[in-house]
Image (tube, rainbow, N blue to C red; front, side, top):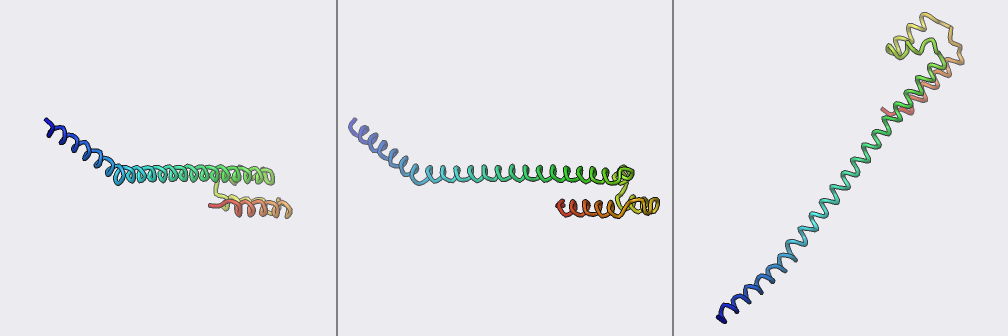
Length: 125
């Protein structure tokens, strides 16, 4: 009966030795790797969210600039504004130029060119 108690004691000692060795060399490094992967994944998700927010802001900015261009053109040449945005800009401009040659003053033409150029320079495609 003493032999069983001694073997049980050795088995318990072996169990605790193996437990501490596995804990030190397997479980702790594995947990560090898992935590590192989780933090990397979270940082990637944050970067994706940030990029999506920036994209949405850029799209909103572009649409607001486009709306301001429409309003500026409508204010400068209200009789042309509906035609300019329903058909291609170049074709409508050429057609209107043929129809109304000289109806726009040079000042209005320069102002319209300046608005268009400034806006096109600001809008990044």
